[in-house]
Structures are given as structure tokens and as C-alpha cells.
Image 1 (cartoon, rainbow, N blue to C red):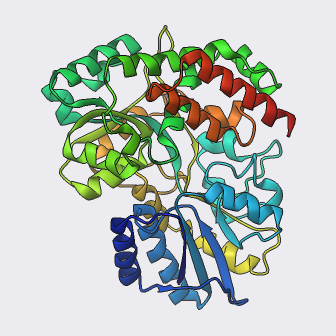
Image 2: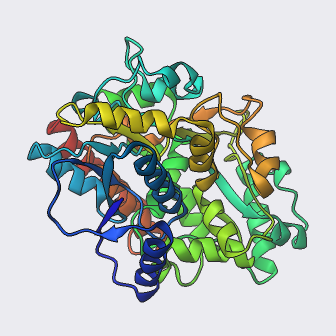
Length: 422
């Protein structure tokens, strides 16, 4: 396997991790040039992530068994924008991560995969996110994405909190106050990396919009009041002093470290962060819970197609080899390793996964299938390109640089601009 790093990170620790991964996986660093006999795989995780380490081994095993070659470009910070450029230039990689957008954004560029042997085992929970009206699927799902509120159970126990009782926002806020009273950070997040603030907005907005208001959003009318309600909660947390003081400089690596070290009670992010935290401290007592609600509704998770989903380009000259690679990913050991790397449920119902120390959370909230799962708000209700604005406006409220009304108005303006460009 050849590795080409496409990232703007310059932190020495990350570079050190790259060197370690290269050495461990037997990869050689590739230049910008490509070999016409080599498949190009654009992968949306950096070389210092658990997902990349698993994928590197899978690719090496595939190459050894088949003789086919794959050059992996590991991208950690600008994947989405770089993919837009590649698609516009008709320079589509043979294989690429669809990161939750195989149907809504990439399906026109992908080979339909419905006839692949593994397709009948795709988790039905993914149908609404990954299948079109004719039942066609366009990516191999390496996971069934699950997101909610992550927690360090030891921190909660010290504060006298049972996470299973936090079914309303009032109960959650009372728990956050108890965590803060112990001297720990109640809610840890990252302002340095793109994403965490947007995830927070995504998860909270999934409940503030009614069905009718959601339909208005899909039809081109920005409904501002529920968006303000979402940001009101974020502002209340800021005013209570529950966010980490180093929010603006903290990275997602710092988020994982805070969970691993037990310096925070809660984080709003995908379960992949639990996997990263457990690599730092395998003894950490971690879990996740659904998001509370304000009324009589049941607490909910947010999820759908995960970041570890992969498609084959319609224009690829290596389609047969690329499809064979997806079949290889679907094998039990490989599919299980992908799901375990993200601490997620597998994308295929035929795959068995060892959830390790977070098994209790999966057994309680995911495996029974009784916890409602809401789609990511931005994927359903915001126009293409609005994710960056969702990050920016939520971040501005966390830092106190903007009022709820001003941030919501900014979101509305950008919504109208981007919707008009569709």
C-alpha cells in the first residue's frame, strides 16, 4: 500500500504518529504522481486515527492476497472541500469515503452496489440514509453511526450521578452542575478543530424542530425560532461556566484525552471518540447515552451513515478490483475491525463486534432497537455547504462572541444563499 498524506496539520505529535503508522503498516510514502495500475483511495481519516490504522492493515492484507495495489491518500482536515474540487474536475478517485453522503451528495458519481453479496445484510437502520427510492445503495457501510452524549462514568459516580436517569434536559443540567462542583469540566468540546461545535448544534437541533418546521426547512424556508432555542441551550451552558476554559485551543485529541483522564463528565460527539480515548487509557470507564428531551418525547440518538462508508467511482478504470476490495471489507474480521475502530455498531447485521468496555451502552441503547434515532440535522434540513456555518455560529455562542439572535440570523442568511444555489 502506498500512502499519500493530504493534510495541513503540522503538529509534531501528529507527524510522529504518521511515522509510527507508516512503520507499522509497511507503507511507503508516495509522491503526487500515480500509477495507472494502482487504485486511488481517498480516505477521510488522518494517519494518527484508529480508523486509519485498521484500514492500513486491511489494505495491506488485500494487496498481499490479490496482488492489486491501492494508494491511500489520508486526509484529516479538508476532505470535504477537496472532494468537491475532485468531483468538479472529473478527477474522481477509484475508491473514496462517502462520510455520510453516499446518497444525497455522491450517488451520481458512484457505482450502485445493490447486487453485491453483502448488500442484503446492510443494517435496516441505514435504509433511509443510504438507499434511494428504488432501494439502490451506493456505498459499503463500515459502521452504523451512533452519536449522543459521551461520558466518563467514574466522574459521574464521584458526583453521585446515574447516567441512565438523565432523560430530560433539566436532569442533565442538574448533573452538569454536580460535575462542575467536583472541580471537573462539565462539558468538554473543541474550538480548534472543525466539527465539534457543529456536532453540538446538529444533535440539539434534531429535537427543537417539529415535523412541520422540518418540512419548511426542506422546502426552502428557514425557521429561526427552533434554531434560537437550540442556541439558547448552548448559551445557558456557557453562562453556567460548564465548558472547558481551553475550548478555543482544544482539539478533538484533547477531547479524547479529557475522557480518558477523567477530567470531564460529558462530551457531545460521535462514539468514535470513545475508541480514541480508550487507546489512551484502556482502563477508562466510558459510555454514551441518548440526548435528553424537554417534553414527553423519548430520549434519542443521532445517527445514520457513518464516516467509514466507501464507494466506487463510476468512472474508475479499476471497478472490478475496487468492488472486490469492498467485498473484502465485508468479511467478518475486516468489517468487525472497522466498526470497533469507531466504537460503532457494524453496518452489516451479519457482523459480530466486540464493544469492549462500552458494551453496556450498546446493549442498553442500540442493540434492542428501541431508542429513537434522529438523522443528522444538517444532512436533512440544511443546504449543501451550510455545515461550516453551523460550526461557526454555534462556536460564536460557545465563546460569547455572538448573541443567540445574531448567530441565528447569520445562519438564516447563509441558508437562503446556499439554498438558492442548489
